[in-house]
Image 1 (spheres, rainbow, N blue to C red):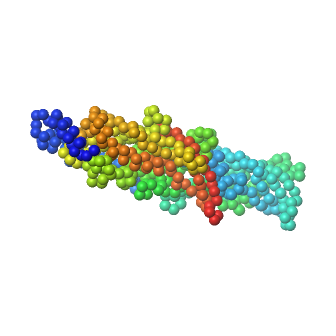
Image 2 (tube, rainbow, N blue to C red):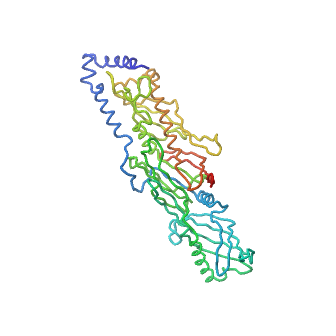
Image 3 (cartoon, one colour):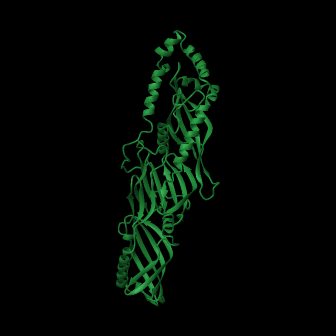
Length: 452
């Protein structure tokens, strides 16, 4: 719809308002809401507050985003990284003059934050077989054993804004060890068993190095000015998860903060959790960078010099759709003889695309839902009770919603995660949207890198 239609309709409204004065004084004079210079300034002031970046990623205890890894996920990461069927790889040790070969058979994984064991550790209960090998390579004796091993976890800062979750194998500790070989059971000799635990801990530490479980790369979205980094992590033994708090340099309100530490549904290995306010802040930044067009011509096409503009006012859970988001926004007219703004709300639908099978993603789809809200000013008042005018001008809204859906889709499919020297493939398995959190459940495969 050309500007002429909006202008004609607007003039009818203006004439009704201005029965006692001439048109020029109404448009440019007494009625402030019709003054385009005022609306232009108001629009510019609103734009200046959207998508603001901080000088650095803040160091505060609340997080708009989190990565949650379950005990099963930790076990799978270690299996993939050690290229072994068991996350505690076997090996050879020389103990009391014997060359011992240890072969893990079964492993149970748990997380702990118990200070008397290890403040932030993964605990492995390992069943293994044991053989003493002669210099000629033949087996002298065989046995079995069971041990509990604690491995501390830590978050390391790497180059730039990259961080990594590291398993400190070089600081591992054998908490409990029982061996049975040729009828000899170490549990019957507690002092010997304790000495054996200390000696084997020392030997394994000497031949071990830190293992990087997962690396968190800077977010690649828009012009790459937005940063997201894992800043802290905590272990929640009762729910069996590690929660890594991720912070951003987007200037977000204090209320944009997740409640962390809850158990994940089903048998998921991992979840990316986001506060809806993070999506709003990211969308505002994409508008500020021009990735989502800010201004449009009268046909609804993106135009940096166009008379119409968009600002965002909110993003949150839709009351009816299970995985729908309400997007509230303001459509401005800042050029011409009759200006103002209209308030509107539309719906984005989040879903799970399972067509790929091994690498499913979250989809974000704009819908035809559009409601003009009360509170419009000037030209915006016309849209509140004129459905035909709204329909004629939907091109701008449709263009905006498509761009917004694309950027929200990139955001919720956050995958700036890597395993050093390996390829990791993520598969979205579930989605839940609530007022204060979007949960994206993930499984993953760790594969050997090409040529590795």
